[in-house]
Image (cartoon, rainbow, N blue to C red; front, side):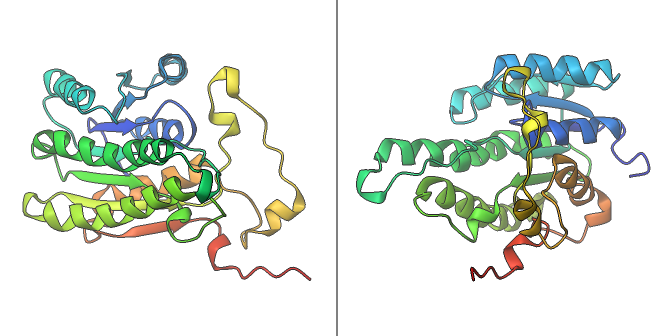
Length: 260
């Protein structure tokens, strides 16, 4: 990005593992100062140590984005240490959708997914707003999911939350336009995050030919695929793009599937 991110302050929620860790590495490699926040202290410490071994400028601040007071405290720390925020990436979420039939679905589980995956990004945007207003060409990027547009059976909370986050993206884009804050989303498809987990959860990818063939590009996605798009959307190269969602799924959602 031709030094675009040099000295930029980037906050990534859920940044200690998976797509979030891939995003953290990518922005830090572009010379941004990256603040990782995550509920998992162990993963956060491992992520920070791994990134610092690469001589990257990163910091870990633990936070549960579903807790308003913790989000307030997080943004206060960012304000005290950096005074501004240039990029907010709302990536934190409950990643594995619970698959329970509607008749036996505990409402509490549905509420928990909505609270983390939808309320969390709203809280982060709300309390980051004063910091973003002090940033340079500030942007918000929401990480949603292709499950916002298509479903497997019995994934009510996750699908509803990601669909809501898609809508929240354009609501924020229009509402924050007077402050010249752009807001976009990336909707990932099947992204292999096994190698990007903390050590106790790390697994090697194992994909069958059928897994690969579901994707017109011939492979499952990686966190690097998401990171490359994020670097573009949060830069001035995307200065005329706001309120949009970019699907990155190797073409999986546009391929008609038949069983003979």
